Image (cartoon, rainbow, N blue to C red; front, side, top):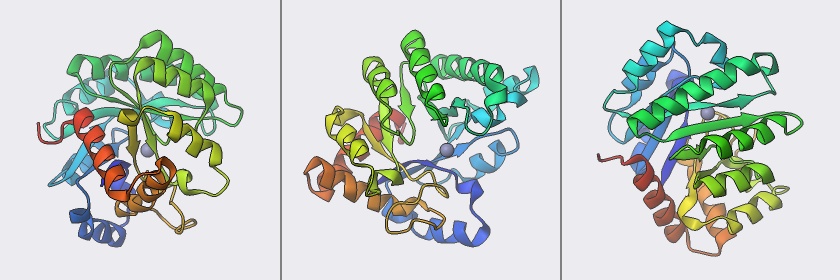
Length: 252
Ligand SMILES: [Zn+2]
């Protein structure tokens, strides 16, 4: 199993200990370093089968400055870094920083392109405006390797992601009873573009809703993906492991 999106640095010491004890169940975990205060800690956690990203989450996009750009360029070259981000648009928490979010997105997309790394995309809004806008950005900018993290099933994003050859990463919401439309999207999408993630400690799958998520619980999302696709757990595991390996090149 591969957890392509976790925030190990958000776990408290006890949670982290438990998460690390379960790491042998996973082929790889990608932990996201989402603001300048977290990059060093994230890189320190990237050992064994844990790999890292560095980036500026859209809710921290206002922190972008020439110094932060320089530091991000520096950390992005660390040997354990396998992607840039997460970046994108968040009008749920920080609609007021939209211009800064777009600048940070463009900067991180250019950095990912220059280093031939995948770009991890986050998007959230109450009314779908961020999703519509990010879909437009994807079609205009055509990132070579992009991941729609915690894909929500938004139709415009699905179309844009498909057209740009992006990857679609499914998190805990795939397991929620009401999300039949999301499972239909998973069935429609090309299998070679499917990934799974936890977004730990957020978005816990069934039957752990209300608890803080952890990487090895990706098993539950993977089981639901297998059921959705009508394949065995082992087949879904092999598929998503292979897709993640091809994109992130763990062993490179
Ligand atoms: Zn995240």
